[in-house]
Image (tube, rainbow, N blue to C red; front, top):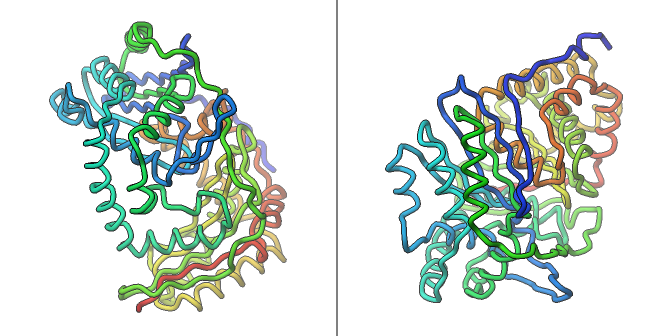
Length: 429
């Protein structure tokens, strides 16, 4: 390969990371040239963390409790959290994933104020029997709304087909029945267990003074008491390497079918292994299915797909999978074409020119994304919470520059196998 891969690239920002006495990891990426700041306070706690042991005692929680807890964090008798941010020119929101929960704000001024508010509302909780019961009805409505979305349904049916036991097969919000079973005591237990600073990370990127914000964070945390961090043993069921079922079709009242083809990873990954594996799969999928590939253009010209067709890869500490697909008038034909395309690629290997193009595109996309504070912060949080405690953007660049065609073809053989492939479709009822 040519030497240009190993040219040193200077990142357009500095990073400061340290750990407070209470265990909270803080990362600041000051960027004076950018007006907007994006901040995120996140915990290594998501929907799959439904069973855990503390001090030898087993706790099994209802599905959807991490998402339920996210909702309740915004209920504060002393302030309207959304109004507090909005009154000073900022917005705030949150999300729950399979493996973490994050609270974030975006603003262009008074960053010190917003950081204090973010820390204060997440590091306090107000639960009563009455407000917990009220929230159950709100979340039940949300679940019903999601269940009417065909794109969400085909995706969840794909995961149910992939996984026998792992809780990734269960919707992040849970079910109406599981939500109704959640108690105030369970919410408090999960909050005290997973919202300890030692299980969390605070990351900011944007136009702020790093010394000022560092002082604000240190002062805010010093005046709070959190006690000794709990020793958490997360428990996950044994998951067979093969899928639970190879194909599933769900009739729904839709005009246009949806088709997803997926491949199940045998295991999860963490740290530098996760970065390397995530990066090679991003390039591999772009070479196979990206908008500039001959395969994509052929399907588009034939009317088998629209421009919403995509391919993605998800990898965490305990599970991983690839998903390819979108809307199609002929789901069976599209599934056959995808399967045949991957089989040919496995037999012949990825074309070197296509791989090099995908590698350069991925590197360019990463470098361009450095101007997007939300991307910087979210990516940092995700990699950190998935076990890369010493994460640095230079490592991602180094992996992209040193990635080889041989490694991509090896990953193709390891992962995109017919015996771990699953097909999920939503068809008109």
